[in-house]
Amino acid sequence: MIYSIETQEYLKYIPHKQDYDFWRSRLSDAEYNTIITELQNRIFGEEIATSSWIPGSDWTDTVFQPIWEKACSKDDATAAKFFGLLVWEVFLNHEDVWSFGRYKKDDIPIKGLTYFILKNPPPQT
Image 1 (tube, rainbow, N blue to C red):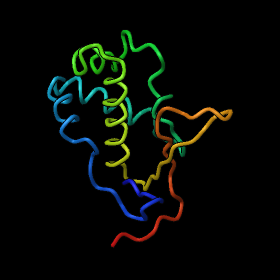
Image 2 (image 1 turned 90 degrees about the vertical axis):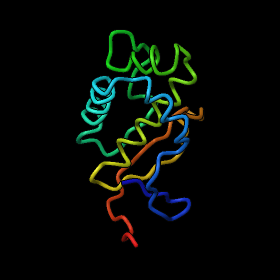
Image 3 (image 1 turned 90 degrees about the horizontal axis):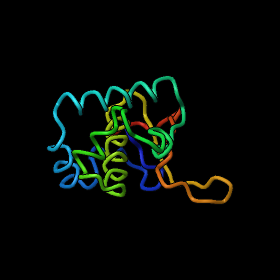
Image 4 (image 1 turned 180 degrees about the vertical axis):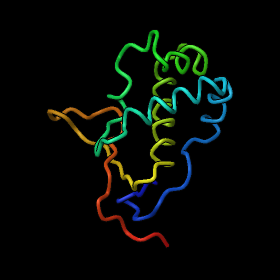
C-alpha cells in the first residue's frame, strides 16, 4: 500500500493510467510478470528503495530490456517513466505500507522516487 505523507491519504491508483495501459499493452504477460517478480525480489527485505537506482543504467539482457525495447520503442525517457509506474504498482500492491518522496543525494536531486516503509502507518478509513 502507498500512503502520501503530503496529502495524508492512502493512494489506490496508478498515476498516468492511460500511458501505463498503453505501454503495458506492448508487453506480453510473461514479460510483465517477469518484470514485476524481479521488482518484488529486489525490494524484498528492504525498508528503503529508490526507483531510479533499482534497474541499473544498462538494461541489455535483463528482464527490464522489453520495457525500453518493446513497450517504449527504445525511448529512454519514456522507458524511465514506465519503469517508475511499474515500481509504483509493486509498492501499491505490497502488503506493507510504503510512502515516498523526492530527495537529494550530495545536494543533487535524485531522478526517481524514494520509497520507505512506514513503521506506524495511520489507520485506513
